[in-house]
Image (cartoon, rainbow, N blue to C red; front, side, top):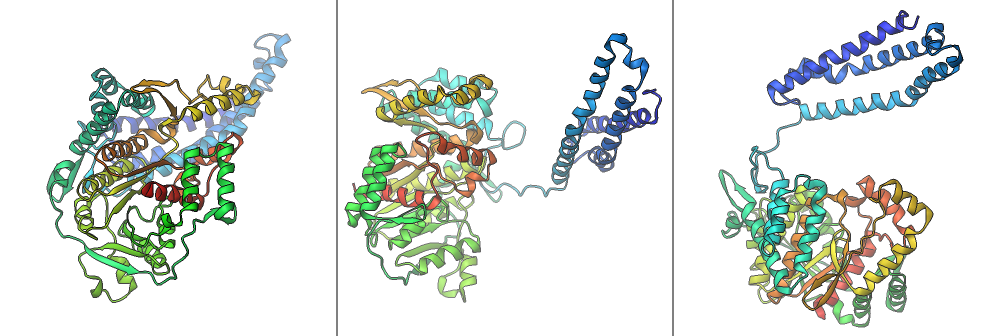
Length: 577
C-alpha cells in the first residue's frame, strides 16, 4: 500500500526532478571549467531554484510513505508477528527526524541559492592596483603560497630543514601554528637568530609582493626605492579647545579614573592578573609624572588614524600634534577634523592634489583629504618624510583589515616605518594581539600553569576536553625554550579561527620592532588587552568567546575606550623612559 499510494509517486518525481538538472549542472561545470559564471543560466537557475517546490513535495511524499507503511500489515509483519511493534516504531522514527530536519535543509538551500546568485552577478574585481599579492601558478593571487614562502625564508635563515617543512605543508590554513612555533623557537636561541629571522622575513615579503602602477608592475621593494608621482599637498588644522591639565584619565565601568583612584585600580588589575606588573608600573609612571603627558611638542604619525584601537582621541585630548593617515573617505575625515578642531592639539593630513586654501568649504576639505596605504605607499612615505624637520616622530601602525588584506596593509605600514625609522630616527609603536606567540615572564608562565591546573580539574572543563578529543581547553603555557642567556617562557595564544594571514601580519610587526630596536630606535611594542571592538565581535565565534572568557580568571574584556587610555599611557611611558 505504501508503494502504490499517491505520495510514493510524488516522492519519486520530485527527487528525480531535482537530480536531473543537478547532474546536468555538474557536467556543464566540468566542461566550462566555471560552475558559477559559465554554466548556461537556465540550467544554473534550475539548479538553485527547483528546491523551493520540489523539496517540500519530495519530503511530503516521503512522509506519506512512512505513514502508510506504519498501517501496512505486510510491512509490519516483515520480521514476524512478534516484532510488529519494533517495525512500527522503526518506521515512525523517520517522521520524527524529518520534522526538525526538513526546515533547516530547505533554509540551507535558500542560503546556497543567495550565495550562488550573488557570485553569478557579482561585478568583476577591479584590476590590480598598488600593493598586491603576487600571481600564483594558476593565475590568481592566493595568499597561501606567498605566506609559506615568507615564513620559510624567515626560519630558513637559521634552519633550512624547518623551512622545507613549511613549504611541504599541505594544510596551511589549519597547520600553520606549528610552523610559527618553530620560527619563534629559532628566534629564542640568540639575539643574532632573532635579528636574522626578522630581516630575512621582511626582505622576502618586500621582494615577493608586487606593486602595480598603471601598466607597470614591479616588486614592492623596487617600488619603494622610487619616489611616488603626484605628491600630496598638506592640510593642517589647529584646534581651538582649551588645553587640559596633564592628567591621565582612564574610562572604566562608567567612571573616569585618575590619580590615586587609578593607581588603586591598577594595583587591583595586577593582583588579579589582568595586566602584568610592568604594564602597571608604566601606567602609574604617567600618573606620577605629568610631564609625560605634555604632548605640545610631540609629533605622532598615525597609520590608520581612525582605528578603534588607535590613540587618536587620547592624543587630541592631551594637545598632541598628529600626522594622520587614513582612507580617502569624507566620513572619516569629517570625524577626525571635527575632533581636532575641538581639541587643543593639531592635525596634519594629506590632500589630493589641491592646496587647502583653494577649498571653499568643509565638505570639499573632507572630500580632498586622505590617501590609500595600498595604492599610495611611496607617496605617503614621501609626504611624511620632510614634515616638521628637527622634530622627533613616533609612528604608530594601527590600520586593520580582514583576511589577506591585513597582510597587505601591514606590509605597507612596515615600508613606511622602515624608512622613517632609518632616515628620521623615528620611534615605532605597535599594539600586539593576545592571540599570538609571545615571550612572557617566568611568573606569568607559572601563574598560567597554576590556573590551568585549577580549571582543568573542574568537571565541565574535563567533559569539554574529553568530548573534543583534547582539542578544546588545551594548555597554552608551553615548555620553556632554551636560548642564549637561559630559558625563555612562551605562551601560545595563536587562534586558528583568525587564520594564518592574521598571524603573518602581526609577525611582520614583531620583525620590524626587532630590526628597528637593533638600529637604535625607541620601540613601544605592547600586548593590548582583549577588547570588544566592532572588528572583533562581528565574528560570532569571538563574540561568544568574549562572553565566556571572564569566567576564567584572570580574563577581563576591556571596552575600547579603556584599552585606548591604558595602551596610550604605556606608550607615553615607553617614549619617556
